Amino acid sequence: MSPPPDASHATFRDELERLEATPPEVIYEEVEALMQEEAELLGRLPHEKVRMLGVLEDPEGSLKRLAIVPYWPRIREHPEADVLRRGQALVLGGAGAFFSGLDPRVDYRGGVLELDQPHEAAVDAVGRGITLVPCAFSWPDVLTLVDPRFRPTLEYAPRGVAKLWTTSRSAPNGTALEAALSPARTSVLKSLLMPRTTTELAQELGLSPAAISAHLSRLKVAGLAEPHRSGKRVYYRLSFAGESLLEIFGEAS
Image (cartoon, rainbow, N blue to C red):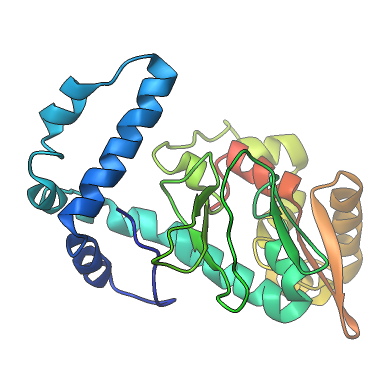
């Protein structure tokens, strides 16, 4: 019931209209499949739960009762930031940089995108490409869509979405992350949400290039940042461990 986007930029209303256009028979089939999955896990079919929602009795009306709009501004900033960050990584470092840190289960090498999780499907993607969707509702999983009606799709959680519905608490004299690393090093780490050169970081944070280099060296040794060369420039970006650390401390936005 979640058709993949057919454009990189679409309004929320556009996507709701596509969702509302889902044929009732598709809704019925997919809810039945979901019920079957739950039955295999629980050992029973949760008919009461589904009937209470009225999904199978009124597929079209059920879609119209979705209530996401009030929360959309808060949700939207996460996938939009992810698209911008990965777009820059693609330009600067190619496909390898683009897929870096997408998820520990996702690996890209030699033109092959690998997803390490159980899934049974035969997918011929030659000539059709693949759609990547940062999705606030997929965490903590990586979801695949291999419906023949659509281009093969991979949905993953954008950075920071694990803390979407929580509020972070600050340490008495600054943030918890600053207490763990130091204010200056925390600033450098957070600035690597987008790839940066040493010079760019120095100008942005008001620190000397030597100080920035020292912080980057420590972050690299700790496995929190990784360099990437593009021509004569060296860009630093967060490693997956660095992204995870920011999420743990609620500093990923």
